[in-house]
Amino acid sequence: MSKYKNILKLFVQFVIIVAGVSASFWVEEYREGLQNQEERLKVLNNLKIELDEIDSYCKERKIAFKKDSEIISHLISNDNHSFDSIKNLVETQFQMEVAIVDYRGFKPPMNRYNSIINEGTLKFVESDSIKQLLSHLHNTISMYLQANVDDEKIIQQKISLYMNDNYPEIIMLENISPENYYNTLKKKINSDLNLKAYLKTKGRIMFVKDFFLDRYVETVIKLRDEIEKKL
Image (cartoon, rainbow, N blue to C red):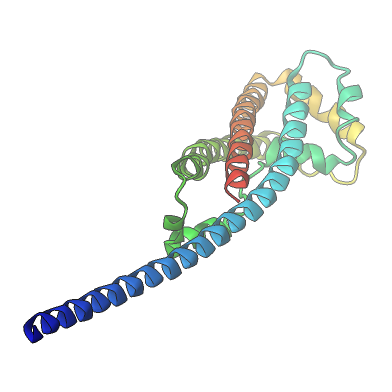
């Protein structure tokens, strides 16, 4: 009888040990699950905050891109009285100069996203759709958009050099009204097919850049909606 009691005692002790170990594992898994959930929410909240910042930045860029494109379009049009349209876009000579001999870059806020990638905390986000949209936004669409910014830089440099070599008097113009600047420049453009072609090329690149900006914004909205569903 004592033999069976010893066996029963050992069995009970074994069960207690197994139960204790299992409970310890369960508690550890539960604690780790809570930590992962906390990290997941932290990552999603940081991404949403940054997407709101990106959205605001893109709205400002959209206005600037559109204004520059319209200025170029009016300057190369066959309408010699298109200043009536341009005067609604600009207040100074400088704003026209930016559209012609400068370029608009695209550097949205990405510090939070870059930190998440560098720290490896994106692993806490379980949603594949969010990860795919992040990659599409910050890699694919962003790459296309930046490529067009780079193309605009190239044509901008060519226009700047061309005008410095052929029309230094326009480059040197200062403190004149937008209308006088427009009239002086428009005469040169109308009589110089090369300059007109340069500006038309710049306008086409700016149009494509604006197209990809719209795709970028669409992805931002989709991504933000997906994140809000998970919060």
